[in-house]
Amino acid sequence: MKLFAFFPCFFLYLVAAKQTPRSNCCRRLPHTYNIGYDITGRPLQLDVGRCSASCENSDVLRSSSYISVLARIRERKYKNLISFVEQKNDNSAESLTCRTHTHHRGECQPSVVHVEAVAFDRGPKYYDVIDECSCRKTPKRCERIPKMKRFFAGTGFEATVDVGQCAGGCRKEKSGKGCRPTRTASRPILGPNGMITVHTIAECNCQPTCYRQHFNVAVTERAENKSTGEYTFRTKVIDVGRCVGTCGPIERCVVRSNKRNQHTGDTKCLMSLETADVTCAPTRVNDITYVGRSGEVEHVAQIRRCGCT
Image (cartoon, rainbow, N blue to C red):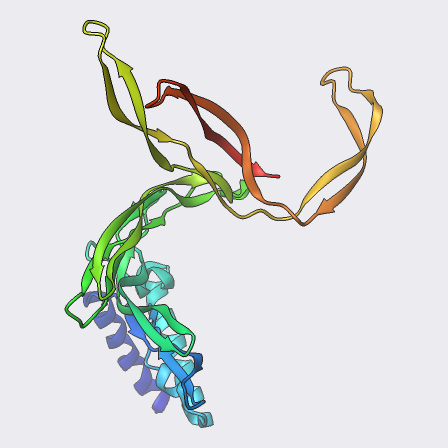
């Protein structure tokens, strides 16, 4: 009798799940870290939070130290039932766990973050704490998306800055390329100790792990007016670039053959050694010249390409 009574209820549940749109189920859950000790030696804990796309309420069961066997069985049956209904409606259980306002598949990500300052005996330390979570549609291509961060929250110096983040896919992900910031900017805000600089992401592109990032310097250039013969001075901005990223171990050839390939002209490597001390450094540098304030030619090294060396 119990089995026959289950099927009508299950059928009604399927109909209700198909007619009623499911919420995005993106929420903030606590995530506590031990960050150190106070002046009395007691451990300090900070809830930095985490974003979860799960619609289940089983987090309370997991937090308890004792869970009965019956509770585990009910939880497992509930998971299997939800998974079966999701596959029937969309053939993708993951796509239903988090949906944007346009009903597209999204990722449950932090939407608002604030900087928490914790004072220790050796000075303050700063931690990013998640305040709110929301479903965001993941862009197909690499691009900059907003990321709001609050500074000095709850005080008269509170300020919210869009620091930005890089998201999206890259066609050459197998070759090690990823969506990374290629241009940065800065914004000054007022704090209790005066003005501070907040670094933000201005542009994102698909780049390898070691790549060139835009970095501008300002110089004073001297120019001569040919009609009057007078000299004028102007500010010239030069993108000198900088190398950012990390490098893994690479193999260096230590013994090569004397014979060269007839087609390519390259020699064959007979023995190579793995080098762990590899840095992301410039591999191509250009010489940029300009006339300085004194009338002499000045030189600026401009990084054009970066690599693991």
